[in-house]
Length: 206
Image (tube, rainbow, N blue to C red):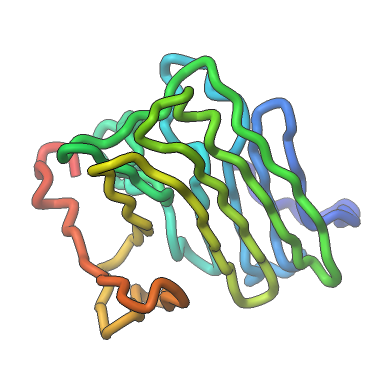
């Protein structure tokens, strides 16, 4: 990464939506300790691209939530399992996102760096009956990211909201803390939180 530099004028905008690639970058302010967000919803057209449509990363002073892929030895894990998405599984197998598809998002800026994102990730499953629809709404402000998912799934399909963290999370009921990150489940009321230690998935890679 390039150093921040010590000269120049700070941009007026606090976010950038790269519509050609479907990448969004946003921050609360231009101070060094501002909360920072990235999100993906756009074209999935490259064989080496990741199945990360709908994925977010969050940073403030250090990573709060980030793809597990950056902690792997190879750095080339493409599956949805390593990204902060809703992971859909059928008969114990992850339902794949498909190349040649394009998801969409609408970004609506608010006051003082806040913004709302409405993303339609349904196209990334290319008509697979396992995932009839998946939409993700993000509400981002100075100290919080709120994620609201709505989806329809086929018979026998499970949906798991997952957040990868750089440190071990500790679960207490419907909350989980991982370093400076606090995850609170708003709904559903009967949500069950669990923790996966990636090292158990193969120490040669994770």
